[in-house]
Length: 289
Image 1 (cartoon, helix red, strand yellow):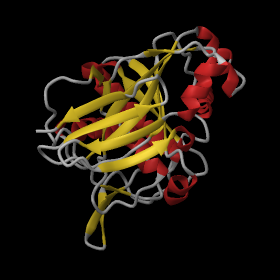
Image 2 (cartoon, one colour):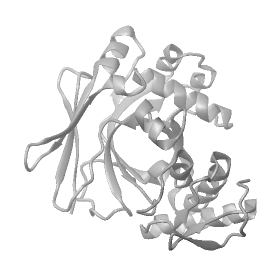
Image 3 (spheres, helix red, strand yellow):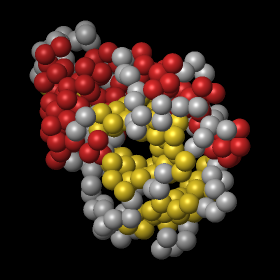
Image 4 (cartoon, helix red, strand yellow):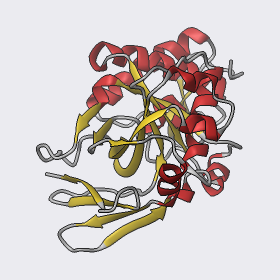
């Protein structure tokens, strides 16, 4: 546990209260309060920046257990903080993992999404892949996971930061609220056969994020931003969660890291254009009200 001197109370530090923990029960109780903040779309109180990853995972698991009553069972997993600069800023030496619940997924192209869908919304171009075979649990390399994926699914993740505006952001702090997982808008799945040609297209894709109203290109990245190759990102997810006892099953969805990050505003229409996967480009978009 984090070795802190106070009970689960708040103390004044520079005129700002910081939540401290002394026991596992306090961590679990705080996880339940994180679920309330998630539902109410409100920021968390300040959390001591020395919170350990071990304690953060206890809070997160309590948080997710509460959410499962409304959002269903785990249905996918993701990798975040995939670049060295992001990891350096968070004080970590590898990416972060997170869990998707079944109720977080819906198809893109529906009604406009309220711009205040979260405490501090952020929209990410997100490549989701679908597990096609139990063989992924035996994968020993990125090449192996390519044979256990059935579909590629260009998507948009409607992420959310629950962090207090004055919070020092660390890897453990992000883990507390499941690295911002809230909602994923999925496009049309593309069959993936694991062939050399399919892998080449996958590793060569480019994603542009565009403001439809102004025509401005807001962001653009190629597949190599995903840990050098999207297959590396898939393999990291498998290895990371396998160590935590996860057994992957066909249909599980894996999110391979943000390929754009946009703070939405009311009335904005955002689309992502995915090139290289098929002969024609693929578009996935969202309108904010």
